[in-house]
Figure (cartoon, rainbow over the protein chains, first blue to last red):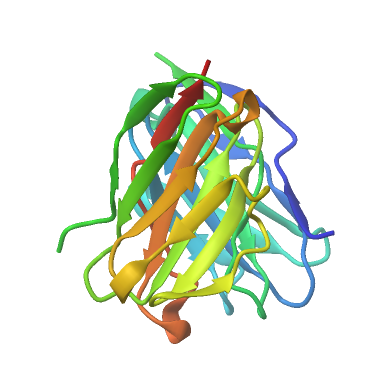
Length: 113
Length: 115
């Protein structure tokens, strides 16, 4: 079965420090990969996507993610965390022959001042 | 351009009652998707409309769930009768067409609580 894994329920980081939110996938073919963010009482907002090309993808709010095919990973990163980055982050994958997104369980990012 | 909207934002009902959730996609978007997140778990696909037709309903949990998209515009998702395990956040998403089906725009979700 196809799946996306986010091994950490919560990530805590001090403001100004770099952050990483982990994601691995098990999807057939060459998947499209996404990161979404959900702020409190808000919907899912698109952060970034990997379709093809450069393995390092840059997205909104200074976030970036690195596609690693050999490790089937797509970790989300930011060089310097802000308190306002505190939210719930979802990794998702789309197999090339389907329209349905496969999501991970989400990782809550808490950035402390 | 208005985003995807969902109504209501929150619904609390008793077990056995009926609830209808509504989703208005971005105008002109042919594709409409329903997803659900049960507390603490992953967001799971429920079904996909292309215009008014159900393209894929493989994620619908059982026949207590009925989705419609009459006229190919807004969609409703009815749960009848609701059970405790139906509690969760129901997200709707839309995308323009088959070529851009990976660009799914999500609504704010409807939080359903069944007591």
